[in-house]
Image (cartoon, rainbow, N blue to C red):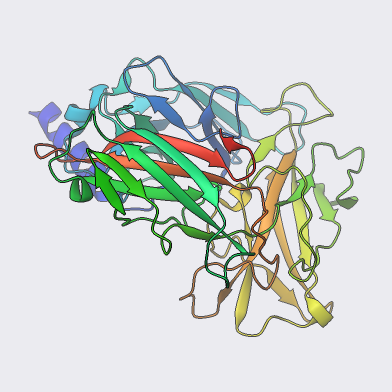
Length: 423
C-alpha cells in the first residue's frame, strides 16, 4: 500500500509540475545547462525512436557540494502542453532516475559541481515519438525543480523538403525570409490531413517567434504543400555578434579588459553599436549557440572558469530607445526575453549595460527590442536591422495524431540553411 501511495504521489507531482515552462532554469545556483547530440554542442537535442542515439547533458551547481539530483521525462503535445498519456505508456523503465555522474571543479577559482550524463539510459527510454521535456529536480521531489530542457524523439514517417525564398511583398523583399516546404505524408495516409498534421517552424532554434497553426496551401494524394505567400515569413535580422571568452590570459578581439574584483573575474567586452543603418556584412556565426571551451586548460567542463561578462550597447546619440526595452538574445539567455536578458540603461554613461555570469567559451548573441507593454514580438529593426541575405537556420517540425492516439507524434524534421540549403 505504501508503494502504491508513493507511485500516485509521484504521478500527481509529475502532472502538477508539467504545467511549468518547458525550457527554463528555476534555481539560481544552476548554470550552463546544455543538452545536445553527442559531441556537437551546436545541435538540437533530437534522437530517433528505437535507436541507439544519445544526448549529452551537462550542468553546473555553484553551491559547490554534491546533491541528489533526479530526472524524468515528460511527453508533450505539439504545443508543449503535457500529453494525456500515462508515463508507463511512453517510458520503458523507471520514471524517477538518479543523476550519478558528477565531478568537483578543478583549478577554477569558482567552486562548482559539474554534472553530466548520457541520455537516455537503459533504465529509462522513451517509447513514443514526440516532444519531450527533461526535468531535473532535487531529492526525488518534482516540486524542487532545478531546470527543464526540451528534446525531441523522432519517428521518421514523413519526408520534408524545404527552401528559403525572398518574399514577393515589396515591403518585405529586402528584409525578410520566407519558408516554403512540402510534406510527403503518404506513409501516414491521414484521413483529414489539415487537422491531423501540425507544423512548427523555428528560426535559429528560438521558440519566442515560432510559427504554428499553418494550413497546407495544396493537398494532392497526401502530399502537403505549404507555400502561402502570407505564412512562414521571418525577419532576417543580421549575423549574430560574438564574444570569445575562451581565455582570460589573452584578450580576444572582442575583449577590452579583464579585472579581478573581490577575487571574482570580470570581463569587459568592447561596446556594441547599432547596425540597423549599416549595410549587410556576411561573416560566419553560430546563430545563437554557445560552445563551452577553453584555450588555457585541458578539460572544457570542470576546469573552465566563471566570470561576470559585461555587455554594453551604445544607442544612437546615447539616448535611450523611447518606449522600448533592449534584450540580449541567444542561448546564453536561454532565448528568453526576461529580466536576466534585459539591458539596463545607464543615464550617466548613455549606454545600455548587462553583466552575465558565464563559463569560459565562445558565445553568439544579438540584440532585440520589445515595447514596454510587452505586446509586440521581439524586433531587430532598432538594433540590428534586417537583411534578406542573412544566414539563418530554419527547422520544420511535423506532427501527426492518428484518430486513436492521445498525443502528437513527431514524424518529420528538417533543418535548412538560408545560404547553404538543407543541413
